[in-house]
Length: 289
Length: 334
Image (tube, rainbow over all chains, first blue to last red; front, side, top):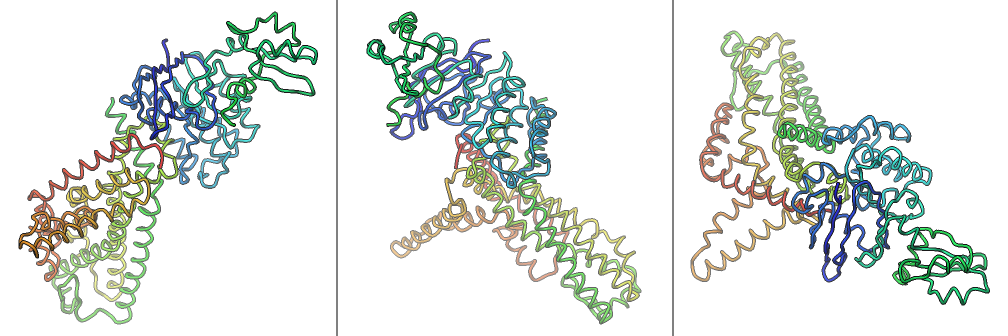
């Protein structure tokens, strides 16, 4: 199948500020894409545009539909948790399941009930009686039981305990994901999703600064533990980031075309693949200043 | 196939509305109806048991002298029973319809606003339910489901009142049961209320359309916008009109209609509003001085649809509902 999401010159302006500034990207089917960026970088705006929730400029095709004009068709195959959506306070667990089962042809009630059985939620419970974590559990149980071609999760685990977060991502990978599905995730807790991602997109100030598969990133970026005596040699190779761990310098290099070669870096010290969080911090340097 | 799916979705959307508004649309009229039965029925039963059957009683504007004597004449009993039935239906309906008016007004104001305020709109929009379906479900809830619930509860309350009154009378030796059971009023009254529903929908459309439009549009304080805009517009028009009249002796044509337009935009959901508008006014005056002829109400009501007034309102209401749908499309947060 061709691209699930294809954006060309996608822009969104709020007043004078460009929230998304003419970005291009393609997300093929069967990928789990992490859309990572600081607050206000345009992540949520990009996702909302793809879900037909806001008007935008440029071209954007999601599952072959234009989200601006074909949202109703699009929503048959897309499901999302966008921008910390909140469930209505009056909704009961049992009614929520009945309703989604009633209106969504791809909803698997048995699956939702199985997820809910693993929590403290009771069918008669109302959302207003639940803790924040329980609300997220209910929302995730509903969404995960929908067999959508594209699942968009904007900060899906916010407010969830760490045990349930791990459980959720495990379910997402083992129980939900297959080669016909595509998942786009944004989160602040990068370290929790990096093992399940197949692709990364870093977004900063409304622009995509890095878009690559995890394999490409593994090939391209190298982290080196540089001993004291080789510091000047390492600095000469222009590391993109450096930090100190237990008195040892840890440097991040771009070993892509035009950068340092792997042999050069191996000579400097112990090499390893950087974590997404370290790569993110290096890439976003300056945005938080 | 597609219409099946839409009908199914609509049924779930209406259920959702009922879950959310069970309090104002079911429990409130139920509790008031129950209180009504207890208080009115209790007073009636007490009065009949303690003071005996009154020499004459006024039912719905008719004085019936000495019902015990009248009871000897079967046709009089039937009339008395019929009047009791109509009176009970009217008595039980009036307070419940007043509650309905308030409930529908605030329901419409919040219908497309509350979920934007608490941001749960993003959850509803993550499901395959189109904006027209959502807005339509709210309009159907306001104009059909809520009134039907009220009519049903009013009928039950009226039945209970009739039963209490007949039992109290029966204990005094006046048996109205057979008269009641053969009285067409007993069966026709709730049917008439249901038959009035299409008239109600037509007259309620401009108000429901306006309130849903404001509900879909307002970023905050929908009540203030919904009431403020028409009222301020009315004051401005009246003021300009008065100034013009002083100055040039002319009046604005618009000023003649402004009050009616505002009344219909805000008051269309009041059951029976159609009796108060021009064309129907003579009937309305007639009604206040004479006993209510329940069958006549129906024909007067349908007669109110003959003029262009009602249908201009329908066109406006439909246009405003369309506007509410269009607004809803790009509204993702409050």
